Length: 261
Image (cartoon, rainbow, N blue to C red):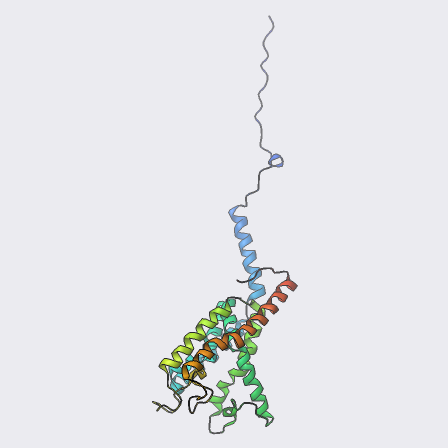
């Protein structure tokens, strides 16, 4: 009688080479990738610590001095709003904050620069920087006010470094509208009796270009309306367009296709 031979059963083994399914990264791999991406972004976008500390020290001196000398309403000026946006930008490295400040003050402060350099050569352009050469104003106060010259240069450098956020045009426009409405309805008119000698009045030129008396060419509400519409169209939009164009060129050159809305 012949015996029945039972075939030997084999247990299939898993082979990584035969596994055709998608590879799911482990948590360790995900963590490593995230850390690598973060490190790369910080390397390309981080602003120098010396800049952060230096600018913060400047603001730590300017804020209390301006508060005591000119009062809190001085910080409603566009250029002073830009100072605070820049302070937030250097620490958070958020492109939107630096972009807003750059959109708002670059062109006006370029005019300040031109007039200042003209005064140095005894060829004043607008007279807006005459106070910088007034010996009755302390050197300290004039030194603080020199931020009008270097702030736009700093902002352009920051925007080139961390990128331009295209939302800045509307974000700054809204801030500027609020500042102008506050200046028009709540702050002193040129010619009003002031509570103290250096109290800001005709802030952001909402009553005309003179600090002595309101303009008389048109009704005051017409002038305000012109400012509300004219500044975004004539000042902010051209700056926005130029910065957006430069940022697009920069991203193309570096191979970074990301852009802000």
